[in-house]
Image 1 (spheres, rainbow, N blue to C red):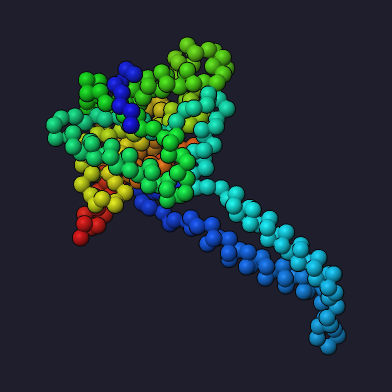
Image 2: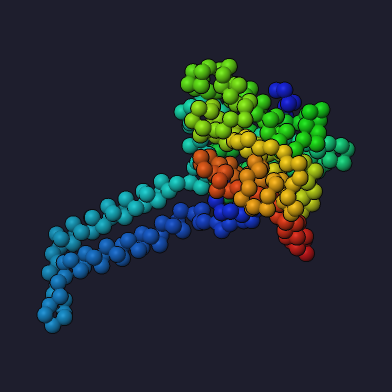
Length: 327
């Protein structure tokens, strides 16, 4: 885990509630399919070589040569289907693909940068527990998906600066994260001249400009487009069972211009309207969904897919589920 100072889009509710897991064992997929193929092609072969007689009875017309040829064709077809299963796209394949992005120099890790905004003696232990859960959830998810090769490529950068971040909201953290991205991303650009050089690329990242094709952070790894925020609200969700999906953290996007609301709409944690689709630039996410969220956000439309406007009802529902799991 790297700790530094500040100067240095899935289903709609998928990041809060668990989804069904697909089989991880290739044999569970391979065996039924191969049996089905063998049965299907054998029936097709029999139908083609055994025409019915006028009285409805089949007339055997199969020769030994035809039998061997057909069985060889069947074996080749089964081998092809087996190869396709071996090459079945892995659950977190998008993370692999993002690490090979042509616009970034090789060697960059994958991660969500984590910002701490709650300080004080009473927050030190809960904060340490959140970091511990973040450290544990990544290997657990990767091992469960049989993709442990991604683990050495993961880092956990923590921005912990009480002087500048104490009490910071998502808007302040967004600006702090843009400053971090500007310093970390611009030296890694493969073709900075596309954005007018390092200096202009640096300035572009610091701006509120949308992530269009002229923005250095567009279409690249979520590492430079999204970050995690841990504040007092997040720490309050920590007191749950060891195997729960919590605690809750705040997932913040840098893509877009978001203004602070003078008056937040009743029942919501940000935003002016009562429209559940209002975009406020951040959302709640369970720590256990860290890898799943990162993989989904590799997609250009990932944020649109997973976004859920933050509201107190979501936290209350999570806390109720947490209390229920204790009994």
